[in-house]
Amino acid sequence: MQNRKKTGLDVFEEFSKALKLGAYSIYYICGEEVFFHDRALKLLMNLIPQDVRDFNFDMVHGQDSNVSQVISLCKSYPMMAEKRLIIVRDFQSLTKATGNDGSSLNDFLPLIEKPNPTAIAVFMDEKPIPKTTKIGKKIATSNQVGFFEFSVTPDYLVPDWVTNWTNKEHNFVIEPQAAQLLVQFIGSDLLLLSNEIEKLVTAKSKEGVINEKDIRDLVGFSKEFTVFELKDSIIQRRTNDAIQIADQILSQGDGAVGEILKSLGYFNSIYVNIWQYLRAQAKGNSPDEIAMALGINGFRLGMLQKEARLYSLSSMPVIFEILYDADRAMKGFSTLDEQSIFFLTIHRLCSV
Image 1 (cartoon, one colour):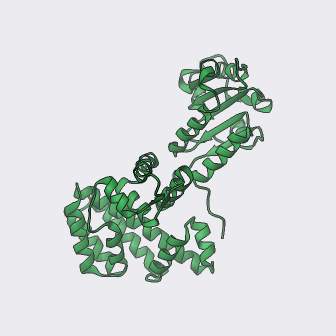
Image 2 (spheres, helix red, strand yellow):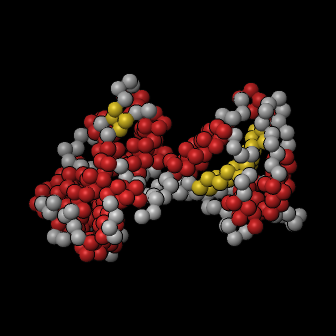
Image 3 (cartoon, helix red, strand yellow):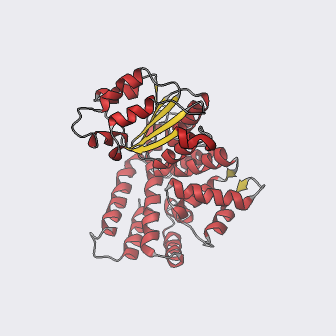
């Protein structure tokens, strides 16, 4: 079993350590999880004291500048400070603004070979620069460049991200069910979640532990039932209970369609986890190996083990077909109304 893939938080911790150590003069930051781009920028800005920042900080956008201008900035020296900072957003767009002067991104190769030791150059893109290009290969493999790619956090790992971020960023503990509930209410956008976590931490003051009640109080909900109770009823094949809970969830929500879509997305993440667990188990992997590969903690592993016992690997294709049918129906490929689609999906899931 392979080790789990690094999460954005793992990469961010590596970036923070490299920055504290002054490990590189050139950084390349990429990936679609732009939440971490913004966090990285805040750390970078702290490197230049406020009183000398006007003389030692430049932020340029690729489409508004060109290769030769940026190289000139990267070679310049600080004024009344130890370092100067140059940040280039949309680095790969520099070629679009170059014009006909014959320059290209490959002109950065000498700079990478011999960086300016008194400057910190940061190149940023959402999509990584292709490693098939000369400059892309150099950036990805050079010991002179700190390469940090922030991939989008999978939905099923977002509750774990909430737990880890709350602890590492604020030194608070958020209970696992509370983290799940926060994601259910807020969604998987890390920026929105981090804002809500900050509100929770501020409200809790010195207590240090965030629970489900705190989540409900924060977002203004007092739901008797949530999608967690609905999920438990479905997995335990308690059809009547599941339908009653679903009906109450829809009646309490602000919009039936939104509640249904969030619930279906949650069900999909749950069944993906069960499928991955069963598949790994069939290969002879131990629970600890499975937990490592899926990037889950002991609490979630225990829940997953209980849920997986109620399914077989052969039942998973049927489950995903049901969820696929529901997704298509919600997108208009059905004559049923949204509530009927939801209830029918629950009936079908309970019958597997």
